[in-house]
Length: 526
Image (cartoon, rainbow, N blue to C red; front, side, top):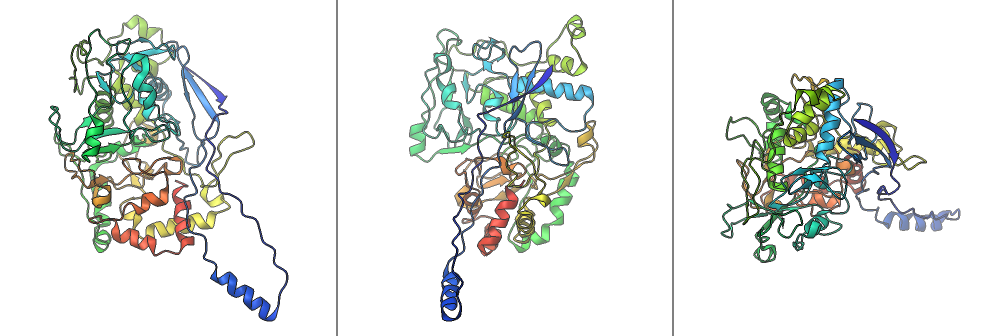
């Protein structure tokens, strides 16, 4: 495995603010001054606005190994003082753990094809088992912004995947070039053999050059179900810092939640945890906290999004006709000859080679660094590389500090809990560590405006896990369905009939515009 730095001139520019011209008034006195003062007082102050995502910069690394001809390019983000930064490994790991993370990053970025072999686009090896039904053809495709492991990129790659290698799929209307990557659930089953609320994969391998001869599998009728109002959409969640979340004990989550019980009750906020049906412990991953662990999260995504059967989910959801020709499960732990392992440069590479793809996915997510906290106005340096200005060093430090205070004062922090602590861990950075996810990982009723009608475990159709806000400073799409790219609109969407957030949003709405702006500036610094 090797790493080299490179520059990426096509990096996305930061959404900027148009400069305002300054008006110079002549020196006035007496009645004239009073008239001008009165006119100035009648001018409405500017309304609050989303300052937009921080830049991703143009500094990347390419991770390679002997098995990868071209490697994987990852646009890692600048570190904050705590060593956090999207696209980086945890700051405190052993050399073997670090090597395992880099090797698992390569697997996370691998293309997935029906039969495996060398991918003709990347010239790198591919993971076998795509389909028969699928939403994407790599983990990286959905989790790529602002770095590998993130969420939807600015240009949606699903349209390309729809017809890759001769596939005959049409692109559903809710998948757009500049919109987020999406998956679709049918709220009520149309009688296709899947239950209410289940994911219906967007695409089929039918017609692909690498599909088995005679493979027949039609796409779901999304147009019909959209007309019926029967489609609920989801976008990918980011996977930065999730090892901290996994390593937080149930007792710590419950104690933190209970500590705010009285304050939440005053504001009409309830909430409860989703739990595993197997061992009744707290589940915490996914939009409705439906998954207990990162391995379960990886296994489910491999099966549902990519169509790869694996040791956790060994059966095809939608086999089609003459499409399901592989021995199942397709992804398994590898029995690697000792002689082969002896040729590898380190223990981490050996562990990755022996592990299944979903184990590699889980290790990659578990050892991902948390997003860095950088002032929203950090900007870029002379080369275009993203900077990470500490919040207290920003030219808008007072605004950010006031935004943090108001975020707590209006009640946002009662669900978006700033700080939690992990338990003991073999990974140095995760060992008894305080971290800042801005979530209580509990389910809350979000009202009719955000309800999607999908029930998952103890999560009702109008309930969602408090979305962790760390990393929101660089995100492009908001809410579970990606309906907006405007942070202010996302806040406003929390207010509707039956929402536990109504009083909190009313408190936010009652702030002067300048203080609302402070909150937005603070959020875009997370």
